[in-house]
Image (cartoon, rainbow, N blue to C red):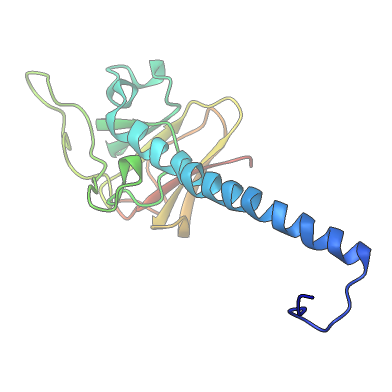
Amino acid sequence: MKTPISTRSVTPGQIGLFRGARLFAPGSAIAVALILLFGGTAHANTDEENIFSSEACQEWPGSSKFKFTIYYNSGMNGAWRNIGYSVYDFNSLKPGGSSTNVYKLKFCGGGVSTPPPGAAANIKNNAASAENYHYKYWARVYYNSGYKGAQDVMAPYQHIARFRNVYNDNASFRWTSS
């Protein structure tokens, strides 16, 4: 006769609960692994798109698939960059979720015989105006990284010829539903 491990009595209903927990545990581990594997990918891919996509530096900003354009000068002049996805920090984009490869988002406008003012300059704390070409979402440019602090807001199809709250003091950008 085998000696029981526990002297505590267990009902048949409780045995079913234990079996369910034991079967559920591997499924939980797989679910957690999938979330960890793919959960951070959305942010990483959006950073990658904002940095490397050919849409970012389209010659005619309004023709880009990226529907937000930020400019170096007031009046939507000078160098520009089309942005397709929210940017948590203009000076810290991490394509592929990498913590070692960090990029600063820069203005476009290079490749022409006379580059416009601001070409290749960092966007952070250097932008003066912007346009929102999106038909549905509002565009917000924030004073601080992480979508914090003062902000300038553009409704769909609106532009701001000179930022009121974040003029040359801007660190992040986000799309919102209103």
